[in-house]
Image 1 (cartoon, rainbow, N blue to C red):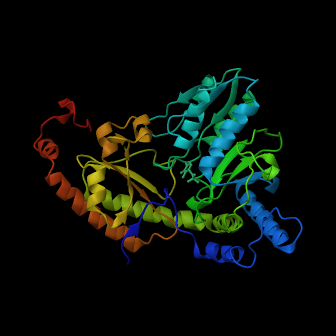
Image 2 (cartoon, rainbow, N blue to C red):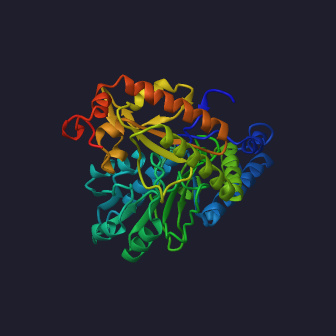
Image 3 (cartoon, protein in one colour):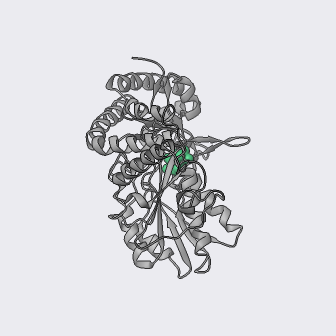
Length: 404
Ligand SMILES: *Cc1c(COP(=O)(O)O)cnc(C)c1O
């Protein structure tokens, strides 16, 4: 087994060697610009781009003409939200989203408030899920768009997007879905969920970084204002020379995900459960953050009470994971996603996100279980709070301790 071990597959994934293989010719002999209409170099590039468009569309139940290539999901989220808002601003200036969305969604909406838009940010339950009744109640005559992600990047919690799509369709409101974490992991179908706009990116499903797509429904047609001025590529919605090798890789990544999704999810779930059971057997006061029922197979987000996540990450340097603390200008802020679920600041700071994936092995999981158990024990031995808890001091009465 090679160290370090990668268990941060929600942040990014390695490129699958089968994906890299189909990309290589488009750096070399077939390097043409896909919008060169006058020679074979351009034609071959365009052909490859269109084949990839069909591969990506097939994974999400769309038609190829409904996809716009972008540089990734940050751009797709910006284009969907700002583009739809700007086109429909005469209908009204109200948007709805959820507190646990990705920053690219929340900040795109925040930016629109400077142009007079108002935004309703809905809460989630302790399990991380949105209650569709809250969404129903939030819709107004001037609501233009609702944005709810499919699966969360910190907790793997899956939102009830089919119920949400039914509500938005009935209300005549656009439904944008950030489907970055779900595509290739669980079924995501734009028809079943009645999604109007969906953000995708290649690097979370074993494709290359810097390439993504926005699904834009054609029936009924969804209208957007492009955010990038220039040559009018992608039917005017996104100017810029296409990243042909990246797009070819994205297409292959989607094809492989479609073929292997079910078997892979079953295998990854077994490994995740092995990790969860192993940690639970060796560590007391461990809590899983978010729904276990509605959750991606590869995600385990856990809090180790009385252990700082940052200290934990330093202690397990041989294992790449993320913590529930975000570094801001001066201090460590607890994850806003965990906070929105009602997780205390202490437990949010004690959380670690394990992201298992296609290349995770049972041997790696067993190594991580042993290492984490040993390090939690060691770090707790250094914690006066933990000592007090063990000695029976009622820490729920100590303001700065976590209440669990
Ligand atoms: C990674 C991620 C993004 C951003 O995608 P990029 O392609 O890296 O810009 C957006 N949303 C979610 C849920 C993500 O996990």
